[in-house]
Image: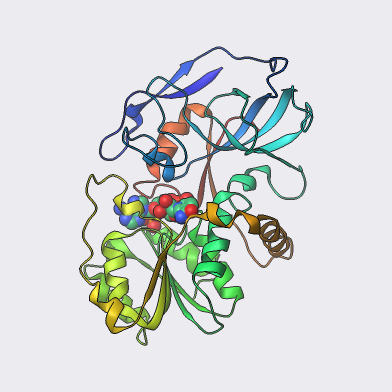
Length: 337
Ligand code: NDP
C-alpha cells in the first residue's frame, strides 16, 4: 500500500522534501461494526487549502495533518469492502480519503456515490467537486452578477478560475483572466472563451495592466490570489463593485501576509468585499450538479485537467500548485479502475 506521508510541519513554501512516499500495510476488509469502507483510491485532488493543514498552528474545522501520518484530501475511489449499508463493493464514491492506494474510511459522512458515465470520474474532484462548487457558489451567491458586468478573475486557468470565467460568459458578462504563463493565457482566450487574458508575471505594474483591460473599471473581481493583485484590483473597481475573496494562494507560504494599501478605495467607490467558504453553501450542491453537468453535456463549458500519473508523483504535483506548474485542475491518478 503505497502512501504519501507528511514528514514534518511545513514553514514557508512547501517542497517535495516535506513529504515521503513509503510502503505501508493495507487493510482490505472493513472491520465488522465499524460502519466503514475499504476503498481503492483512483483520483486524488491537489488543493491549495492542503498547504494550511501542513502548518502546526492550523485551526479550522479540520485538524492539521500530523507528521508521520498519511496526507488526506478529496478523492474518487472504488469500494472494495463495505461494513456500511449505504455502500457496496463496486460502488464509486467521492469525498475525503487518504493519499494512498487503499484506504479504510470510518468517517463516511463526506462520501457520496457517483456514477461512472459519460462524465470522467476525475471530474468529481474538479468540475463537479469542491473547486467547481466553489466557482458556482462564489460567482452566483457572492458576486451578485448582472448581464453586461465587467468581470476579472485571477488564477483564471486553475480549478476554480476556469469555471468562474465560463459561468460569467454564460451570464452575459465581459471576462478577463490573469494567469502565470503564455500557454495559460492562450488557453483562456482560445479554449475557455475569456474575452481577454494576460500574464501577470510579464506586467511590471499590475495597476496599469488592469487599467488597460478595464478602461471603464471592474464590476466583479473574483480573487483567487490576494496580495498585490487584490491591491491593484481595488484601485480599478467601479463604484458599487463587488470583490469575492475566494482564496489567497499568493500568501499561503508567507508567515505574515503582505499588506493591502488601497483600502480607501472601498469607501470612495462603495465596494463590497466579501470572503466566503464554499462549505457555507452546501445546500446548493444538488442545484450546482444539475446546472454544471448540463452545461458540460450541452458543450457550453469545458474543463481542463492536469493529471499526474502515479501516487509517487503526488508530492511534486501538489507542490507545483504554488509555482503555477499545473495547467488546469491538478489531479493525481493513482489507478484508473
Ligand atoms: P489552482 O488550480 O488555480 O492552482 C493554483 C494556481 O495559483 C496556480 O496554478 C498558479 O497559477 C496560481 N498561483 C500560485 N502561486 C501564486 C502566486 N504567488 N501569485 C499568484 N498566483 C499564484 O487552484 P484552485 O483553483 O484549486 O484554487 C484557487 C483559489 O481558490 C485558491 O486560493 C484556493 O485556496 C481557493 N479556494 C477557496 C475555496 C473557498 O471555499 N473559499 C475553496 C477552494 C479553493 P498561475 O500560473 O496563474 O500563477
